[in-house]
Image (cartoon, rainbow, N blue to C red; front, side, top):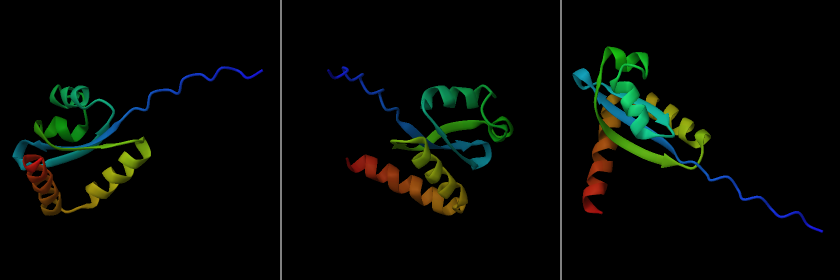
Length: 99
């Protein structure tokens, strides 16, 4: 006799995000809950960087199926020069406008 299979746990979506912070600086991170993480940054409980340069707005997000994928993307974005990050942000915004 077969055991009834238990339901698979719901897959949680990971988000790569970029914040525009004071002085036009950019901060990149990953999270499971974008709203909660942004609030943490705003309240000074996020990263050391965002305590020094408070975030003004979320300028980019992309979702991933796993933490590993999100971390790889985060690492790649953090290695990009600021100009390349801004181009990526602008291209994503343009894509959104044409959808």
